[in-house]
Amino acid sequence: MADAVERLKTGFEQFKADVYDKKPELFEPLKAHQSPKYMVFACSDSRVCPSVTLGLHPGEAFAVRNIASMVPPYDKTKYAGVGSAIEYAVCALKVEVIVVIGHSRCGGIKALLSLEDGAPDKFHFVEEWVRIGGPAKTKVKTDHASVPFEDQCSILEKVRYIHTLHMHIRTVSL
View: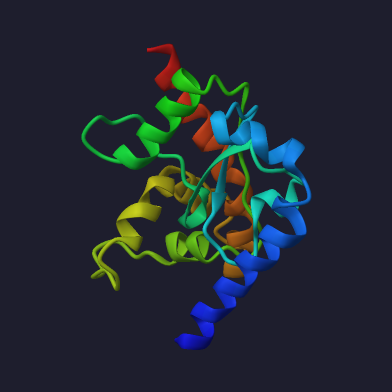
């Protein structure tokens, strides 16, 4: 544990010396306010960092990371964390672009596709969260029933974005 904490302290000190202190023109304006152009939904997976993969700098993106990059439907009583992030990004920060990115071999997508109706949950929160992608899972299971599981996962990684988009187009048009 001590080594892990020390690694973080060293990383911060290195960032401060090598990046922050050397780029005051970037960081000084960010002290006063943020005005990101993008809102980015990305997976919590430690192997994928949206700032790195998209080449974004501090202040360019308001980011939300969660398991499988899920964007749940509008609901004032559920998913308040994601809902409040969207509301703040759109209404207060005036972001211009909302991006949802995923990645291959996503554990959240694999968990969603592995869910069996009526089976007990293994975790307290994960299964309920990934069930947001249930309609996309149903489509993949129906349309690609003869395809091996790993290939279904790969297909679902892509198809669920279409379902997310359709779900939110309906939300916006209400």
